Amino acid sequence: MDEMRTIFECSVPGRQAVMPEPLDVPEAALPEALRRDTPLALPEVSELDVVRHFTRLSRRNFGVDSHFYPLGSCTMKYNPKVAESVAALPGFAGLHPHTASVEAYLDTCQGALAVVYKLERRLAEIAGMAAGCLQPMAGAHGELAGVLLIAAYHKAHGNNERDVILIPDSAHGTNPASAAMAGFKVRTLPSDRRGVVDFDAFTSLMDGQVAGVMLTCPNTHGLFEPQVAEMSALAHEHGALMYYDGANLNAIVGQCRPGVLGFDVMHFNLHKTFGTPHGMGGPGSGAIAVGERLEAFLPGPRVVKQGDNYTLQTSERSIGKMAPFFGSFLVALRAYAYILALGDAGLKRVSEGALLNANYVLARLKEAWKPAYEGFCMHECLFTAGDKTAAHGVQALDIAKALLDRGFHAPTVYFPLTVKEGLMIEPTETESRQTLDAFCDALLEIARLAEEDPDALFQAPTTMPVGRLDQAKAAKTLDCADLA
Ligand SMILES: Cc1ncc(COP(=O)(O)O)c(C=O)c1O
Image (cartoon, rainbow, N blue to C red; front, side):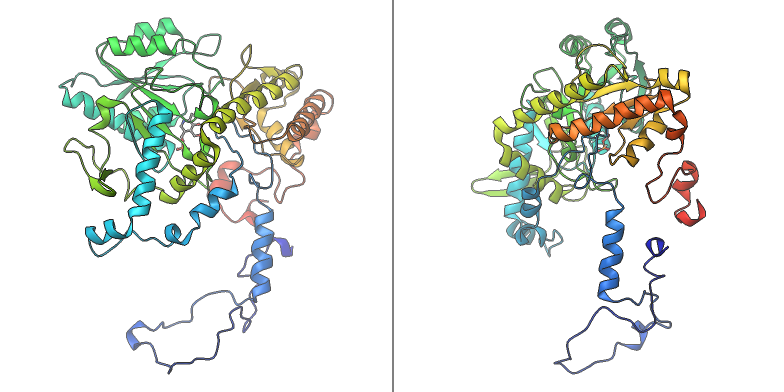
């Protein structure tokens, strides 16, 4: 029961963790107006109580540093510690952007501005585009910036009739949400039986009302869009722009560049491709890159180089600020450290390893679990548990929970929506063959249980601090004692 106690329940009157040194200055009372009427309601605990409590909580977490985390489309790969030590350098970590004046800001932040400038250029190179911008704070925020740029471009060209964005049915939900937030209507592109965009449907939906196309490539079925170049050409012929959702860039980084495939604007999930922490819904970074025709519209201010110094400039046509200062700066700094540490050859090995690992898992599992689509995959493999549901009542959720009991984070389940009882596994390039084998062995055992003893799976998880919860209630009721 101790395990479940909150830090407040550990409180013992009079106990304390801080042992202040004797004063060596005269004691002064706080002004009356600033004093509290009632004591501060803090737990009274010793230093050891605090350390044990939070260490215990941290050990109940599933994280990349403790467990294999094959969450499809999320790229939960190892975050190298070298990037952490760079972000912790006092010159960066202690920097505060709120200075007395712009002059003082430019004077004290030259090193940080150099990082912004150089990383934006490096990202533009990786994208095969003209310029980058670090402001957006997450992938979805980068999408919004991107579609706002598309809107600004068409407005500047008097194309006011263009109010539609084409988005595949396999896209992440943030794509249509971003397009709608920017004021566009969404037309959905169906997938064909191979799991890629139906090119005939694409052709028939493309007309003079289309402002842009948002594509994820490889898509969320883990498949490269074979007609991406033709789609870009057709979109451009019709005056529409191409948006690249870069959430899956780790599958092609170092091999090919979205700009060369015909994309005009893209976002990176720095927290995926470049191995920086995802955090709990953040901190992330959804930096963007654009081709020449969109550069003038980028969010501002932008860092520019004048002689040996860095300064700030905002284009008159800029869509404005997407975030204070330069977004998640310390996340961007970690990504820059990662890119420099790997170099060009290392980035190429990232995508090679991501594909090899995903195809290894696919090959080991495909007899026991039905692949959603035929053939090789890119950086993630997608299965359907639909046949097991029909025959034995075992659902993707049961499989996810059973994996927790075996020491693995669940893959992404029920996404993309195009696949029934989907299980989307993204092993990433940072995992060893031993880990992949242990994971595949667990899934093979679960496949056997699904047929021989499905009840064993319906009970899972049995080794976690809590078992099956009412998930809707769990999201709203944060005290787990009420959920048992
Ligand atoms: C394909 C795809 N696009 C966009 C996003 C949104 O990225 P973020 O979670 O950083 O907002 C995700 C997130 O998983 C994704 O998988």
